[in-house]
Amino acid sequence: MNLSGFEPFLESLAKGPVLRKTLALTLRILAAVLILAGLFMALGTIGQIINVIRIDAAEALGGMLSLVLVVAGFFLAVKVVLFRAKSILTSSESEYPIVSLSLLLLRTAGELLALFYSVFGFISGITIWFGGEFPFLPSFWRSLFLPGIPAFILGLGIILASLLQAILMLVAFYLLAELLLLLRDLATNCRR
Image (tube, rainbow, N blue to C red; front, side, top):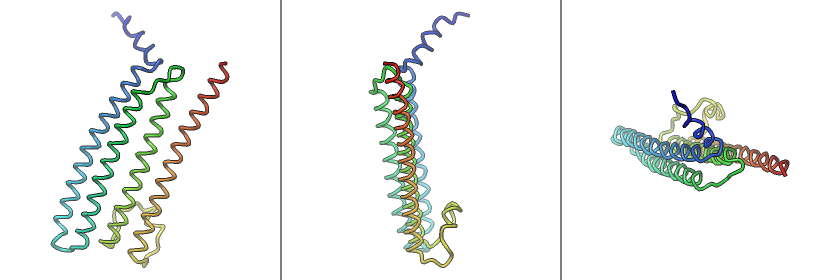
């Protein structure tokens, strides 16, 4: 078995071009998966709206607002992923290519998590405002609020808590990316 073509492949992995193309392709595939997931979630939300519209118009209105947020959230997630895929292809770090790719992936993860928490929080708040219930909320959010709190205050609290969580996620992942950048700069300065 001749493996002579394998060594150049491994060498190119360490230098970054093959890995850069692979990560960009992976992010594009993730964008396609996000489009399909957004479509299924939007169709599920439309189905819930159709089931509820005859019973409770206010809850159906909340469902429509949630549908707009679902579509907007998935649209933004796809835009973030495609932008980062383009950034990965155009990055030209030659000395430490894996570090620069890791920086971009950390930022992407932080942006997607922040987007998820924001959209989920707004959808949860709207559901509470228009439906008055929150059975699908994680128990750690439910435990933050005492029974008997008015729906508006509860929904507002969920939205504010999720926005705070989104900001913390974004800052944490950007901080990790900056620390990785700092380590790269230290390594570059030590080489000189």
